[in-house]
Length: 301
Image 1 (cartoon, rainbow, N blue to C red):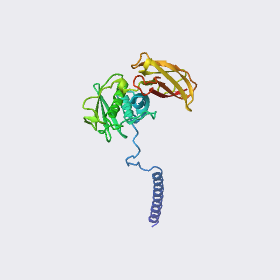
Image 2 (image 1 turned 120 degrees about the vertical axis):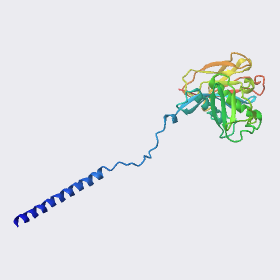
Image 3 (image 1 turned 45 degrees about the horizontal axis):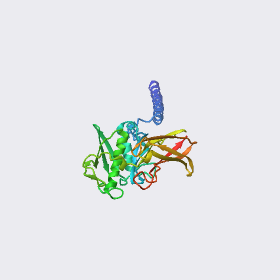
Image 4 (image 1 turned 45 degrees about the vertical axis):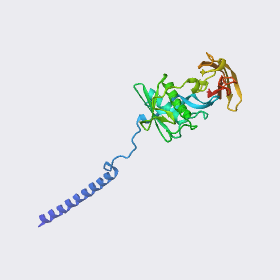
């Protein structure tokens, strides 16, 4: 009988030990679970990293805009800084797209230089085997241009053609489409065939300032461009922001009465100025109506 009682006591003790061990293990497991939760298998909703192709960089391109002249609305060459996709900005196609889009939108740093295309018009440029096509999207593209005449529409198209040629550095006819489809006219001007450059003397302002561009320059700086000036004579002046004349002088083109190059040097202290170059001929160089002037904002560092 004593042996049986002794065995029962041993069983009870062992059972208690097992229970205590189980409790300790359970507490540790519970604690461990709270500190290290199971891996989350829910799909991540984190934003997808933006590819490098979506990044932009600045590109400086030549762009022709409409402006007032002694002979009416003409085209003036400008130098514009635009943002372009970083992966195409340095390519010919990327520069073409930036320049043509700016010409159509009227995106100019000079409020006197504008576009005759309707507001919100957009342009997409393609270049294949040397052929350039500009596809336009927007409203009222088959109506006449800015002043309601086919002539104004033709000048709007010329702003694109001259811009394309300036970027490429060669004469290139431009095919215009609307919404991806061929059209016989845009803004009242004929587009049934590719559009080529118009005559310089009847399309461009008679004075064109090509440089300096939008970047800051150091003094002295060189001014260059082309002009069709009577007696090859030009006048120029540099004005401060309050309109006072800082410097002024004269220059000459290489030839008289036809577009030819000119260049001169200007010295000025650091500041922001307006540079104006005129043909300086009160008779308007044979066309009447007074002199033609082109201007450029210049920052001297």
